[in-house]
Image 1: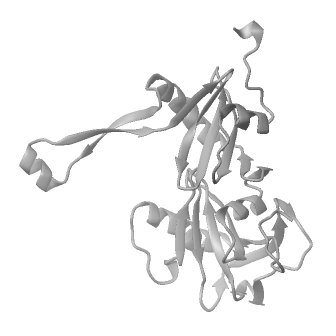
Image 2: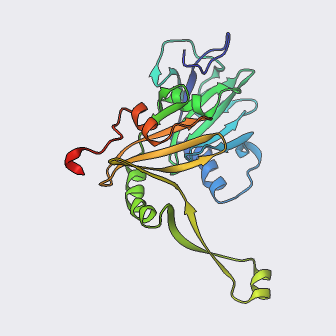
Image 3: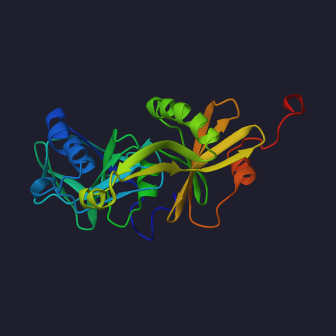
Amino acid sequence: MTACGGGEEWDGVAVVTYTERALGQHVKRRIRLLSTGVELRGDLAPDTAWTDALGYTFIGRRPEPYETGVRGVRAMRVGVRVRDRVRGFSRTGPAVYRLGDGYRLVDVFDPTDRYVATAAARQSMSGRCILLHLGATRRQGERCDRLFLTPEHVRYWRDLLPVVLRNRGYGYLYQRLGRRRDRQAAGDSTEILAERFDLEEVGEHILVGKTRRDQRYRHVFTDGGEYLVTAIQHGDPYLEGPELLALLGLSATRSAAGE
């Protein structure tokens, strides 16, 4: 068990694969439209959507009466394909499936909006458990999981990290124009903003991230800027730098040769 199940509930997800047409016209189209602020309606409208502290987006939906364009379904638990009978998502015809009571489909996208997978999961299952079952994260402790960023995201952070260090926790500066009525009242009104990150230097490591609601993430780099791993903590009490590094199997002390 992964501590994601409860009682008699099945502890796993059904990973759904789609035809290229269905994936492009429906699943990926939703995130493109949502990212531009378009209000989705009809068969594109989700039941719910949320984003975790790290930036993973979850789009939950219950297609009625069927889900079409399905190429295949497989059961997974903590990142491993299992031979269990798929629960909550049953085939009713060629490429056509129906959701069971208490289940929903969840489309998962990473922090760069890259499509990760679609899972048929219990409606009560959290985003944390979905990521664990998909294999996107690995359980590191009771309230901590680890993962590795995609190469694209690592390149982004290698460029951003020197800026955050130089600005003592702040990212790139940018301007946000005021509303037209405000600008007319106050002249050429602009606002200088910068994204704020939590920054901690512990021995030979740099930890950078954010705390949002009941989650905290930290990207771990060496003091030379090499990316090592990312940790997501769920709920208080959060582990601070040295404790978190120890949980991840990293030394928090600087070697004598490096001092």
